[in-house]
Every structure is written in structure tokens, then in C-alpha cells.
Image 1 (cartoon, rainbow, N blue to C red):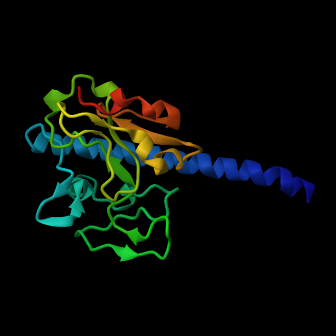
Image 2: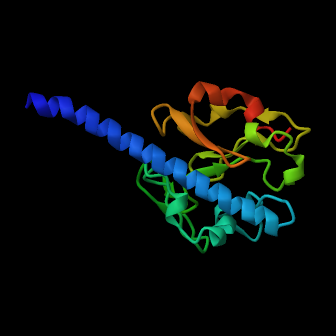
Image 3: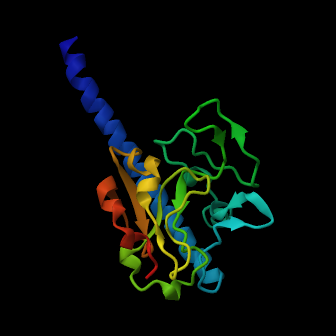
Length: 190
């Protein structure tokens, strides 16, 4: 019994680290897909949503470049599945996450639609992060408008040991503490 009490926390820690690494790998793969999308779209990131269908988000537009629905799902977020075809949300019976939106586990910075040329510091600008895939995003709506505070999005700090995997616009992925993500300059296209 004592041995089990000692091993169980270690096992949980290893499992958590494994899920965090799988999530980081997903973000890296999505980043590569978005790089190809940007080349095909004349230097522009995908729009946040597709105006013809409010259930269609940026992940639907990136999917043809990944050909994987699993890459859009963080293993630490049970309500973050992705389905192609922009299906309508379905009820989950969970008050914290009342709907499966089928838009994945990650959120795109709202400078989407911006030209890659506008990004003056790709290695210092967050492109993707752990999220809910329901339309939440960070950054600035337009470089002339004030920024949205990341503190308003609490699930960001709860996914991976009070931190988040983030993917920067240059494609590198890293885990950051919640407090570090409050630097609003990380979310601006500049």
C-alpha cells in the first residue's frame, strides 16, 4: 500500500507531462498547416469564422492541410473534439462546458486575417494557444484598437499545470506560466 501511495503521484505526473507534450506536438503540426495555408492564401491567415456558417471556424479551413481531426484536440481537454463539416453544437450536460462545439481545443489569436507582412516580431507574437475552440481569442481586433486582456479567459491557465502551451507565429511552441501570458504584447501583431 505504501509503495502504491508513492508511485501513484509519479505516474500521474508522467501522464500529465505526456499529455502536455502531445498537445505541444498538435500545436506545432497546426502551425505547419497554417504556414502552408498562408502561402496558398496570398500571405493571409484564415479568418476567425466563415461568414456563411457560424459553426465553421479557422480550424475547418486549416483541416485540409493536416488531414487529421485528432491534431485539433488537446488530450487534457475532454470537450475539445474537432469534427469536419461544421456541425452544430451539441449539449454536454456540464455547466462549465455546456456544448461540444466541435471546433477543437485551440484558439487562434485574433490578428487572423492579417497579412503575414504585418507581423513584425513572429517569434514574439502568439498565434495559437490552448483554448476552448468556441470562438474565444486574444490579441487586438485591429492594431489601432485596444487589446483584450488574456486574464479574462480563465481556462487558459488551467489546462497544463497552471500554464498553457502556446505556438508563436514563427512556428515554435512552448509552455508558459499563466502569469507570463498576461503580457499583452505577446498578443499583438505589432
